Image (cartoon, rainbow, N blue to C red; front, side):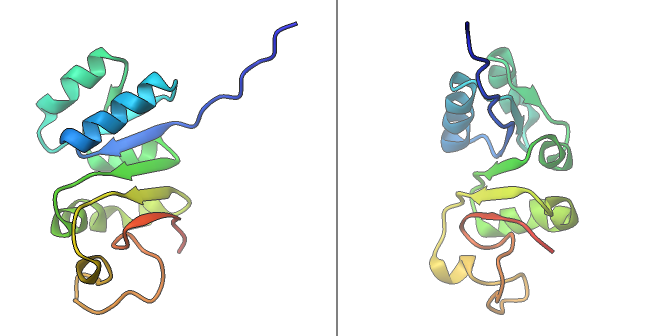
Length: 129
């Protein structure tokens, strides 16, 4: 009698630089359904050839998976990409692996410190509103 393996959660990776690409490949190799998005759509091609689903927009990538991994170059880029999608992040787990300083990650677009978890905080957390 063979046991049915537990399905692995779908994962979306936003940002396909060196780290984002490596993470997407690792998720694919581990058997996850992976959706990828990058501002330069051409970067999704090699991952699509390995089984990833390219998203047309960041909103499509967020909608595709309960876990969203963000690997963008700066917190300003994270804000530009995710701020319009903040309502779509409710109930998702967002792992923000963007490079930057603690002072930059802890501020909202207005420059004030964030008092509650939000899309500007580094690390992983469930998004709630």
